[in-house]
Image (cartoon, rainbow, N blue to C red; front, top):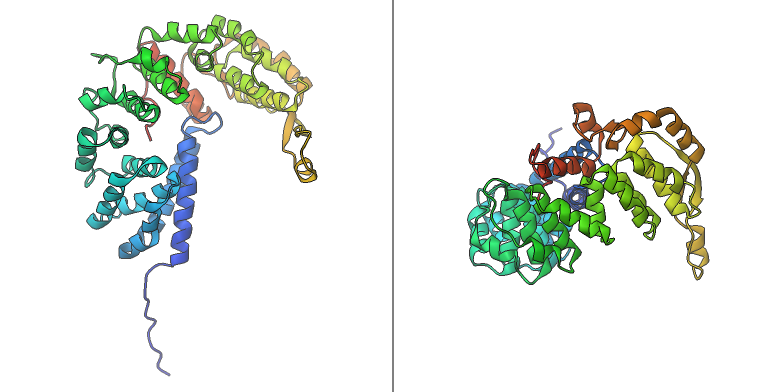
Length: 403
């Protein structure tokens, strides 16, 4: 019996390709929100990048049909979905596909522009650099800021670019914030270019303030420690968080009582970020707080500092008095800490911890960062170590990625 050879109409399964695109959007959201994670390690971050690459390769199998699979995502208003449409097209090597992304970039605003900027910031610049430079020089403020950040992510932005300087003064906070994030990547302590730090740090917009102060810290600005101290002393959240990250032990001890009015989980997170023995002692007390959210956060912070488990029984978080039966039945649960166990750990290790300076996952990272510690500590602790080194005039690695 003769059979007709199977004739394939395509070399991919459209439904599977769409699944790759959906997973790419999901993973990109996780990856971009994980850059400063207090829970994930540098290895976890690398794993996310590898998973993104795997789903990207699954989409590139679509070849000439790729635009029909992901092109519609360029018109959406969700940052991560737009990214999942743009990156495969940019990575395909197809000039027409790249043109479609650049055309979308020229007309985009809001989250769509952010998603396209993200893709342009991680895809090769072979066919896109000229357009990004044109947008930086002649585009609207929004497009110029997006182009600046994408170029900075590739280390292809000149810190002395006059448009970058103007964008730092832009009245739209989201535009100026992107410019400061770009400056973070390209500014250096050697031959520093004057920047309007004071105006940005004094702004009402939290993201703009944070971006400007971080840029100053990584550029070793001598005024930064004093500004951080003054902000912290008046209870400013930005000042307290950076004081915990770069302040000395005495400053942390002064700071802890000032945080009593803060929500318990926020207070515990700031204490954990400091990594200092005084914070450990505060967490021991907060583990017995009547509020289960505070107690649970104190236990998690303790583990973040010591690397030791203190998980105890489960407890439901309080629900609003007007909550219905369903909300009450499915109230979020937390793990309360085993406070006596934590005190036993303090009794056994307290003298060693008190002799250290900053702890993360059981490693003292106040002075040096061993290869084992680098694999173990979380990303936020890693960048804080780098920020302290930069502030001291002895940078050890670049700041967190721009994108």
